[in-house]
Length: 156
Image 1 (cartoon, rainbow, N blue to C red):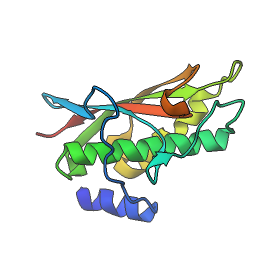
Image 2: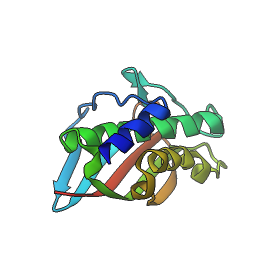
Image 3: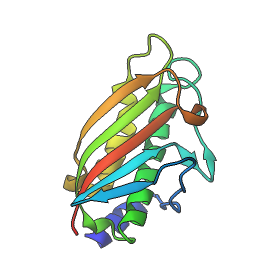
Image 4: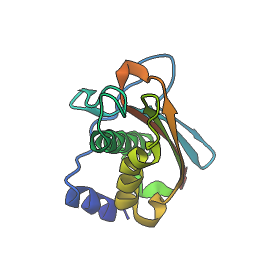
């Protein structure tokens, strides 16, 4: 399955970055039993936040979706690090939680989160179909437009 995941990443033009290290007093992931919990990932690209601001004010919907995609790419990078480089150990993405920095009155958080959901499903296939939440927030760390965390079932 890893070859399939790798080929899907290649087809999508995605190269997973090196997983970012925590910026505060937490760990990037926790494995408990057969569950992998991944800390929230920001829309980092080339070592910096790629999309900042509030959806519905500073950030257009398409840019918010791109931010969510970048968060999903960083989720996969963290999963790869947690799983010793073997994404085929992902049995199922159980849930993605999306936090979208939103101006008052912005109500399309679900559409922003589609950026992450679509990318995860496209890369992982059936194993990438998941439950999710898309929540509007007043602000996020480092003025990021989007943050996404994940829970995955893994093979041991």
